[in-house]
Amino acid sequence: MSSTTRAWQVYQNDTSKNFKSACAANLVLNDIPIPTPGQNSVLVRIHAVGINYRDAMVVAGGYPLTTAPGLVPCCDGAGEVISVGPNSVWAVGDHVILNQSPDWKGGDNEGWRWTNILGAGVVQGSLTQYKVLLDDSLVRKPKNLSWVEAASLSCAGGTAMNTLDSIPAIKEGTTVLTQGTGGFAAALGATVIATSSSDAKLQEAKQLGASELINYKTHPDWHTEVKRLTNGRGVDLVADMGGASTIEQSIACLRQGGTAALVGFLGEQKESNLIFPLVERAITLRGILAMSRQNLLDMVELIEKKDLHPPIGEVFEFEDAKSAFAKILKQDVLGKIVIKVE
Figure 1: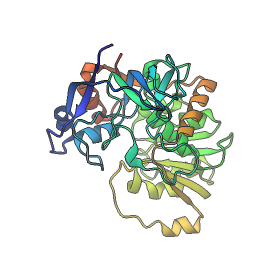
Figure 2 (figure 1 turned 180 degrees about the vertical axis):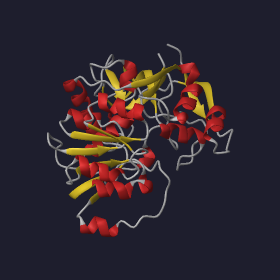
Figure 3 (figure 1 turned 120 degrees about the horizontal axis):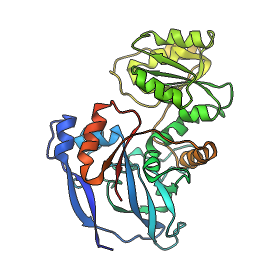
């Protein structure tokens, strides 16, 4: 095997914060040394890498961490263990997916730092042919998934599992409102109401198990539609992606004593006075950032048990990584964008 690996690295050649031009200018394909795995670590041949919008933010210089020159971006991936260091729990030939936050094992995340997530700041990521990873940076790949499918999972799927941990066990009769697909909630038996501005994305959510669909362009006061669909009760859990632009309506969708999980802040930011509705209706707010290793283990178990398959939107070759980043910036792809490495 060669002593070097091909890797995409980030250099701030374009500091305009124009994501499209910056992603094209800042990604550079280089040969870098392949390190030797040390204690409790392994060398993984990366077969595929999933791309998230967060990765484009890192490459373009729009992420809230200073990017080290030469950073290898991305936090998702799937591959095969090809050598192991001393005391590793893994074996040569094991098929694995990446865990972006290895120092959060499960449960309460006191002491965990989001600055340690793979593929940002100074922590090298997965957009490379070979990578050394700590044992806890990996979990077993679902047996029923291809490399491409498995590479798409960790960030989105682990975050979804963390979100569902916001309330006691999801079961039949639980109602969940999501601004995504809601596939895991549906697989666990919940009644899922999906919202989107895209009818095509709503149909994707339906295929993944959503029971009710709401286009929030057609229904700008979508909380009233949620209340109608739940006979005035409201839902048990809302997964809110919009932040300040959607949180007031998300809270209005909840039942008395319901929970809003704040997963993102993709919408326009504005001031909101939430104190009265939170107190008056005993609402719980929970911030969601990444996932624990246990979330990923639970995700793998659910995927295998229910034979779930993540929707893949488009697959790019390793040498064409810049096109993958350009595609994700358009935010018009149904399913995940994946780069095939080996």
